[in-house]
Amino acid sequence: MGVDHSLGYYDKILIAIAASLAGGSLVGAATSVAFRLGLLAGALLATVFVYDAVFRHPPQPETNSKARYAAIVWHLFLALLLLPSLR
Image (tube, rainbow, N blue to C red; front, top):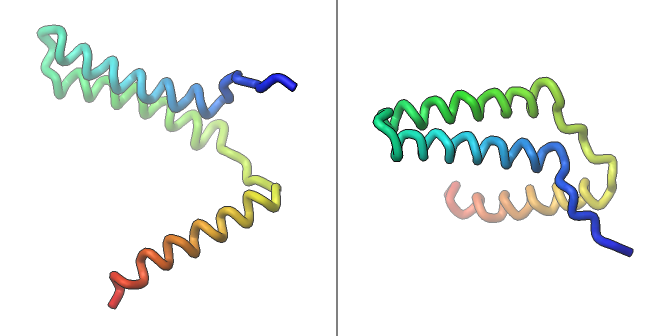
């Protein structure tokens, strides 16, 4: 009855994206490299991870009925939030 705390593939991708952006920012702030250039390098590296997650290993749709109902409820909630602003 132990809880599985292992990270999944997409969890690792999110961590890699955040780490590359943070690393680029840190390089730009802590070295003589311009901050924008360091951030650009981190963003380019993050783009590689996004490409891998979206195009090489795309997420598969859930077949779970609970996930389907949750998506329907979420979209209804968003529609209720947006309806007053459409008037």
